[in-house]
Length: 75
Picture 1 (cartoon, rainbow, N blue to C red):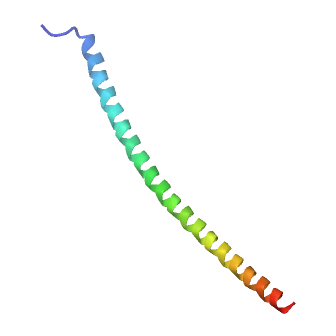
Picture 2 (cartoon, rainbow, N blue to C red):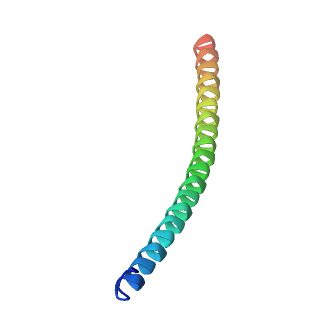
Picture 3 (tube, rainbow, N blue to C red):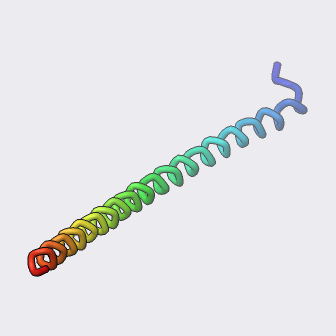
């Protein structure tokens, strides 16, 4: 005996909804992975910029120290 006709569309809708949920989940996973890759690249750029600024700060500090030493030696 087959299920009543009224339950067949509901079961079919459930399968369609479940399939759509899995598709949405897969799309969300792909989006999350892409965002993680972009964030990793951004973090790398920020690290490079910070290292560059730190190097410039040290260079400026060394230059100022040399100028201070030369001024102290001539006074």
